[in-house]
Image (tube, helix red, strand yellow):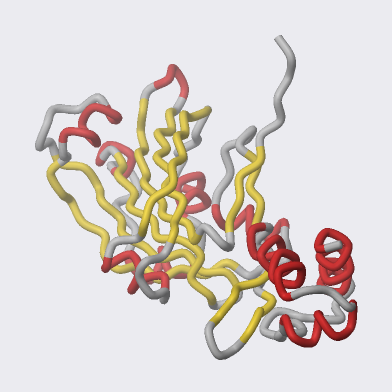
Amino acid sequence: MWSQIADRLRRAIEDGTFKPGDALPGEAEINKRFGVSRSTSRAALDHLETEGLIKRRSGLGSIVIEPRVERSLNRLSSFSEDMRLRGLKPTYRTKSIRLAPAGPTVATELKVESNANVVEIDRILLADGTPMATSMTYLLPSLFEASGMPTIDELDRGSLYTWLRNAGVFFAGGDERIEGALADAQTARDLGVRQPAAVLVCHRTSWAAGKQPVEHVVLHYLADRYSFHVKLAQQ
């Protein structure tokens, strides 16, 4: 019975009867409407929360949230491309761009000497004005020899990948690893959420022709707003 109730509420969310920010009927109302026990109504709402459709908030009830953005892991794409494919407007808030010494992980990924200078770009990525992810990007300084480094204003106006392509830098592929974590205090502030908050941490290294690594980036995505999709083929 809880599954049938969850299905009806899910359809009501999908057809727009309940929009993001709306509260679903509470447990008592569901109990009365369907003639079920409290445990049944709670199980239905718990299931919708597990699916990422609602958030249970004390004093407010079960609130419908924005649908997750799904990104394919089969292709190397920029944040702006992902958002526009879903009808969302990407914007950026650049905190800093500077030359910084490469730490051990960055040095290994970019195949440079430890403490060698790399270009470090710290940004917040937004969709329709709402923070979706933080991005810490490390690039080889040689990429900017001809064009010079972009300014914060330039990075705030558009995609970093588009800026790099215009500067003659093209990525041929990359490796990506994703793990779950809890946001630290700074990441929580940047994303506008309270701790504890779950995030998906993406570590990606991209390379140019000849598999020369040129970019390493660490992204923290809001776990309740983002999901990743990969197609599998049988060997």
